[in-house]
Image (cartoon, rainbow, N blue to C red):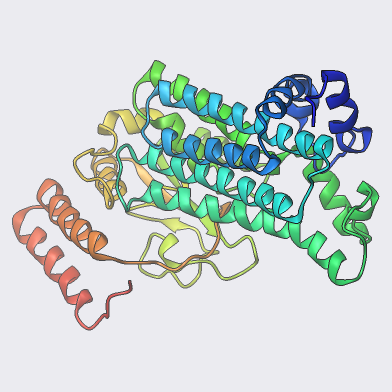
Length: 396
């Protein structure tokens, strides 16, 4: 088959039915990538590449971006953005090449879907490792990245299941955008709100890569990993639009208030996890109270108090940093409060414990006692903790 002209590629590879898709065509494709992709497709056609070979290239770019971003630093964020732009370019080109060469296939559609799953979950997983600060198989931010990747995969699976349901009902695989519109008035309203807010977009590889770059620029300017860690924590979400105003008013009304620990709720309406309630009587998460520690991933801290207390201890890593900071804030005369009205969503997941958790949990409790308690009380504290471990089987 002779090589195509650019005009032929645009006519065959970019029909209006493809470009005008509301649900399947990315905004960046409409804005600029569909203007560039025919040139790349022309090169692939001249080289004799198959559409599936181009799809394999787009998968490699997506996974590579996740691997690169895990290593941290500004340059890795820049490289990740470039790789994701290549990922988008190849994603446009594989379909154009298939339509022009008449080599569309079920295998190609399947590979394209797998590529999106792998690219977006790899980037979120890499962001978790990046926020952790070093490569490790465990850690709070690593877990957050893996949880965010799982949630992104679930969101994509839910969308794909619309097509599965249509196929099982005997409806055609191709569809108009109206076919995906919910018939329920409530669901239709929720979908319109989600479309306006574009919350679902931040899990897409293009948007996420740009957010990672912005966070990397902020971190490079200020030092540390604060912006990156805020980004990964933001993949938990807040169901109350007035949360920011509520927190601001609480701090403004009480200068002695240093920390508000949020109530963590299950977005699916479940009971939530007891360990997110930072007190002994955790059975009633709807009751606010003063506390002596807080949930580090779901809280607001007064900046001046944080700086006065010296911030989180880098020595600790992976457990009890918040308790160390809380005790130093209490010693300075500040108050900490668990505020049940300040709600943050997070999926209810098992409290997995493993060899690294046991080692670091024990080590950091000893550090906590040595740094903050007199020897008699430190011994009693560690003995009480050890007694609570007896008879509890490990949860792996």
